[in-house]
Length: 440
Ligand code: ATP
Image (cartoon, rainbow, N blue to C red):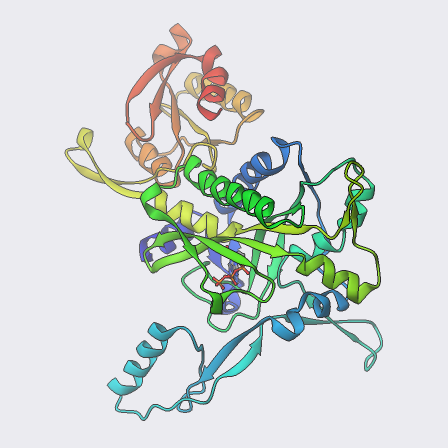
C-alpha cells in the first residue's frame, strides 16, 4: 500500500485533500492522471450499464434534497453505526471492527496505560449543512449519504417522460458524503466519495425478482473481470441477517482482495418495495406502476447495484501494480501499472528519439497532435528512451511511439508494448487504426 500511495502522489493520481493546510481527514484530491482514470472507469460503467442497454436510462439528481427524503428513506433514524469510545484517549471506533479495537488496546498496553471502553452508542453518518441567509432561520439539510434516493424520488418523473416498461433501470453516478468514524486505508473509506448505481425496477414477485437479482450480481462481477481485475482477487460475500441494511431483503458484496484484507467493492441489494413505499407514505404521492398489458397496479421492487468509483479506482490501481525485471536492462526492475488500456490515463505516449533534432521533433509533434484528436496521448522528449519507457510504464501507458531517423525516410515508427516490452514498426498512417483496435 505504501508503494501505491507514494506512486499515486508522485505521478499525479491522488493527493491528500487540502494538503497545504495540513489536510482534511478522509478527503482526497485526484490529480491529472487520477481524474483521467476515474473518468475512464465512469465512462466504461456508463457504457455497459446505460448505453449498451435498452432497458436502462441515466439521470443525475441534486446532491441537496428536501430533508424529508432522508426521513422517508430511514437515513435519519437508521443510517448509523454503533460506536464505542476509548475512555483514555477519547478516540471512537466502530464497535464491529474487532481488529482495529484490539490494535488500539495493544497500543495503550505497550504504553502501560489503562484501557477502558464506553457502552456502544449510535452515531449518525449523515453530513449536515445549513441553508438560508438569515442567521437563526437557517434550515438543516443533508449532503446525500447515498445517491440512491435521488433516483427513487424521480421514479414517476422518469416513467412519465419515457417509454419504459417494467423491468427497467435508472442509472446514476455522483458524489455521496458520510461522516465516517474511521476513514482510512487510503481512499477506501473516505468522507466524500463517488458512487455508480443502478436501481432496477421489477415486478413484486419473489421468483422473478430473484432472477433479476442473480443476473445483476453476475453482470457486475463480470464487469470488474472484463476490465482486467485478476479473478482470484474477487469474490462474493453474502450479508448475514444481522448485517443487512434496514432496507435490504438480500445483499451480496463483491469483495476485492486488498493488501488490507478482503474488502467491499460493490453491493448488490434486493431492496424490495422499501424506497417507493416509504416515499409514497412520506410525500403522499402515488408511486404505483400500472402494467398496461396485465392491467395490474403495483409498487415495483428494486434490485440495486451500488459501487464506489473511488474504491474501483483504488482496486484497479492495486491490481495493476507490479514490479518486474527487464531482461533488456540486465534484470533492472521496472514498475508497471498493467491497467486495461480502456482505463489507462494515457493510451499512448509519443517520443522524438532525440530532442535536439528539429526534424524528429516536428514529425513526432505532428503525430502527437493528430492522435490527440481521438485519444489521450502523452508527450515526452526528456532523457534517454529507456527512462521514458519506464516513466510511462509506471503510469500504465500501454503504447510508446518513438519517432527515429528511419521514420523520416520510411514513414513508420517504433511502437513498444507496455506489458511484453516488444517493439514493432507501424506505418504512421496506421497508428490511429492500431490504437482503435487495441482499445475496442
Ligand atoms: P462499508 O461497509 O464499506 O462502509 P457500505 O456497505 O456502507 O460500505 P454501501 O452503502 O453499500 O456501502 O455503498 C455502496 C458502495 O459505495 C460501496 O460498495 C463502496 O464502493 C462505496 N462506498 C461506501 N462508503 C464509502 C466510503 N466511505 N468511501 C468510499 N467509498 C464508499
